[in-house]
Image 1 (spheres, rainbow, N blue to C red):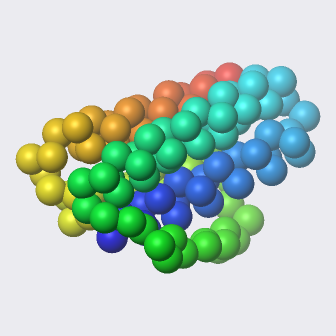
Image 2 (image 1 turned 180 degrees about the vertical axis):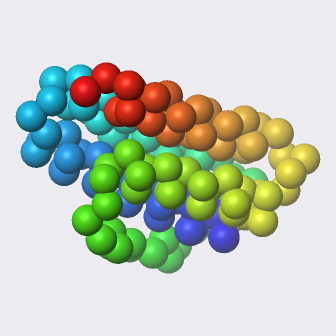
Amino acid sequence: MGKNIIAILFLSRGIAHREHLWTTSLARHLALEAFYKEIVELADTLTETAQERYGMFKDIPYLEPEGEADVADELEYQMEQVEEMRYKAFDKADTPIQNIVDEIVGLYLHTLYKLRRFK
């Protein structure tokens, strides 16, 4: 299950980076740039930390976007998936890993705030 969370983070990075290149809004451009750079760092930290605790994730799936949804709606959906899976993937009492997931969810929320408020 942990590998599925990592796959979602990789998908989010790709979607945000593509939209960053296509948008004509400076606010969206900057918000998405910050997101795709930070999500890579957090995904890396989560993966390495979880692999130390739970073993290697050798078969992280490659996910494709499901449609042409607004980038904010798509990132919100992916954030909800991460929140839904987090306690199935990693023990709830494993606070070092859960704290990293908290940072990930916080990044999604902060990015969604910027995307929806600053056009």
